[in-house]
Image 1 (tube, rainbow, N blue to C red):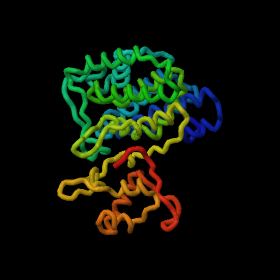
Image 2: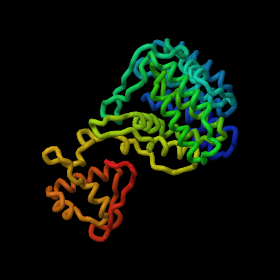
Image 3: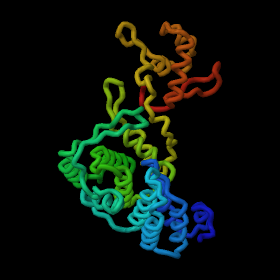
Image 4: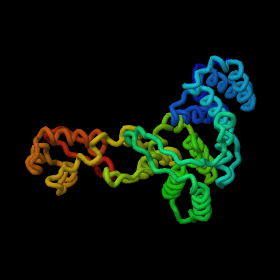
Length: 349
């Protein structure tokens, strides 16, 4: 049994070998959040034994196999703890390896290794179409690749990326391009389950291939943000006035490899129920100026002035201002009387 209560205590010691293992384990465990899974206390303690150098990663995996055979009758299938534990150990193993080949086969192999013995279709391209109710889209779904086009689309995307010339791009532009590529691979959704965890592991390995120092532990606390950012990067609904945006995913990758300190909050990405277009007022189907338009044009405008110019009640104006603030589109700097409005994002409502 390890003498340390949590992983953070290892980092305080400043021992490089142990710190590297901690970061890998935090990433592996954190990535289970994308599917709402939580590893067991047994996995945590076993991981600590590995960090301490008492057992190898192979022994970690062997212990898990033995543990779940012995406790098979006590396992609650609904919690999927066995999946969370075993996949965490396998992610830790893959991330510790200094190997990588850029190809669809590598992506497929990662999926096979992660979900062997868990999914019958591990390492297999799905042969059926899927849709997923997304919290960030209020139950709507991204359009994923059809099953009969997955292989050819994967091959095309990888071939295009393999011949792409990065030599004239800045570091920031390189990261943005890689983020776009990863987003496209995720949208194909090659597998029936486990796509986000597979793509995340592949992304980390690919970024390392470029020589980037990847702060893997970002996935420990923001893996759910990562998935929602992928969703928003691939969701379009002209009817709802929503377009795909790479903004959120670029914020994540900026923190991941560029040392940026972007604020990552899931609620800023969620579409508001019934308010996707409600910041736009219409009269007889004709679009009028909006609260946002007036604030953008005059950052010292008051709620009363907006009410008068739009011909709507002061109460309605204040409600719409609150919606804009809640979506982190605008914020008030200074007092109500002497302050001003600041636009927080390039994404307009």
